Length: 323
Ligand code: MLT
Image (cartoon, rainbow, N blue to C red; front, top):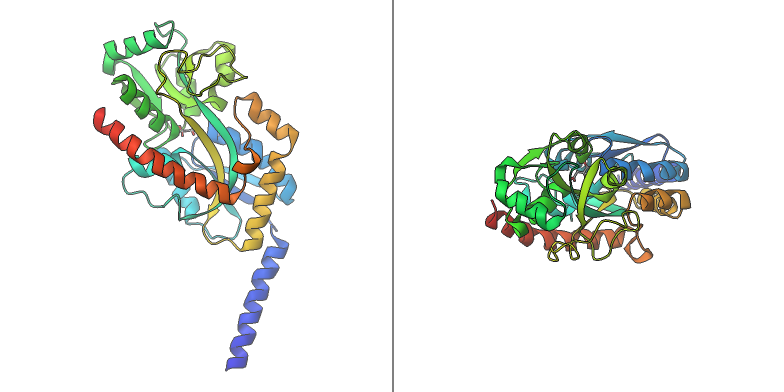
């Protein structure tokens, strides 16, 4: 009996080992929890291409939208942890969501095997090009004067655009009507078509439109101006120093990956982010490339824990002061 058990155990271990040795044997799905064309999708496609080359198998993007990104992340968190389902999460799904999204079906700090940070994405306050204000102070005055007559776009409770918008409204006292989209890609289309008034969004989504003049940027919420948007003032320069916030996008896998499989995913992302063509595309869009100390699974786990701890009290009080 004992001999049979030992043989069974050894062959099971050998099977796992063999699986890891030959991983990946087929395409890998990367779940993007927002609509195609938005910032999460853009960052995902930028890194998926070089990761595919590094892994020798296609990393295929699957957009699974809804509920502020939590639908897609919940589905990916429940996938078999075999390395064939990974996801692009971000500061919303893996930082702000626990504070704002009731009944979250995953724990950002416990339900995943972190793979690594993909890009930092500063937040920009953007409005339709015809918005009647010349600067951030004037913009805030109009928001406060017109209240719910102003429409603010976001991508669902707990998303980056929602959480950074809630923070912006609590700091300024604005009380706009919130309009939800399946991602800030579709929201941007409506902003360019004057169908919605403003949003706080990730720079990688809006930088080309700001440069092209099809939308207006009032400020960027970082301490320094972005090299890709040199004419956009910081919130501090524009008179709202308390609003400094940056988002980030990162690759996760469902909890329980075999160690060798996880190592291959971590190495593939690392290779992708060391490829000058990849970093050029992230920087061109105003994103930031992870520094060595920010890269990899250990740093990402620490970032998630810090962000959940940071955003929970901030957003809960923001909702209380400006429901
Ligand atoms: C998107 O990719 O559409 C955005 O990340 C949505 C958001 O988090 O605001």
